[in-house]
Amino acid sequence: MRWGAPAEAMKIAGAPGFIKFALGENVKQSNWGEQNVLRFPQTRMGTEQVFIDAFTRAKEYEKEMLAYSKLSKKAQATAEAPRRDLELEALVEILHDTRHITCHSYVQSEINMLMNVADRMNFKVNTFTHILEGYKVADKMKARGVNASTFSDWWAYKNEVKDAIPFNAAIMTKEGLNVAINSDDAEMSRRLNQEAAKSVKYGGLSEEQALRLVTINPAKMLHLDQHMGSIKEGKDADVVLWTDNPLSIYAKAAYTFVDGRELFSLESDLALRADIARERERLVQRMLTEKKAGATTRPPVAKANSAWHCDTLGEEKDLAE
Image (tube, rainbow, N blue to C red; front, side, top):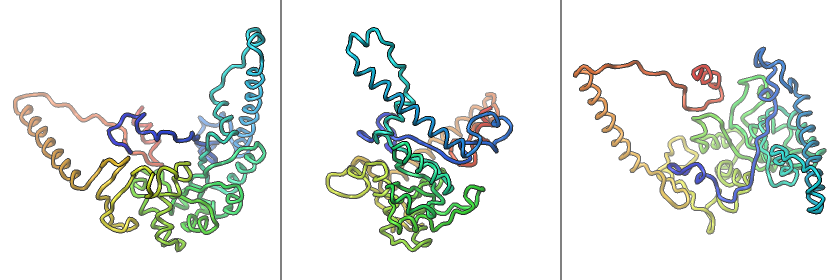
């Protein structure tokens, strides 16, 4: 992250467009309570139909737009222009492989389903994320050139992942897939190097293979491997220097450079912590002084947890309400 930069400056210049797809219970939500029983889809088969309907409409939309563009200016002046649809334009980009799909997924039946829909509708799935049953369909994914970005060792925490195994990343790697380690947990996402190290234990990957899971492999998934993901002349200077083997639980990031600029060092971090401690003490003493002088106090205001975890959405919603 380019800390301190405005949002637009945090983007990677020239990066291709992506889109998030999803499968499973997160989509159909039929077990999410009575307020969700009227929405569509309510079944996994319905989810498949959503994809088919959407890409069918996208193809029709593209034909309409193309036919209108071929009309002469005089004919366009009298004809009704097709209504622009940004959602369908995104799907047309997928059909032309200029926008890439990364799809939330768990079970093999749904993974197969989306790959079959992609074959039928003539588009490509770039990456399956989570992909906890990827070891069951690795051969089919390899045949289609699909990437796999998986959790390291999460399994059996809900029904959809009861068949997940910690050997998943290693099996898919040995099958020849381009594999990465991801996490949508606020804590684990800060130490994916250690998450990748688990594949050395579970599956016997080499240290080099494990490091690739969180460096060049995800860069390939993002179509950015010509710019980042490995240390090579001509690439962006995004480098971390560690105090130990990066796969070790004892390793700390000593220096972090993004675009060749130092954005973190242990030395500067210690100095900033000292500044924060001094400022905290100043504010505490100021409050104590004000209280002794008779100033009124008020109770603290509850606020939502600012860190994102998979299992805290409901808690944050309750707090927000």
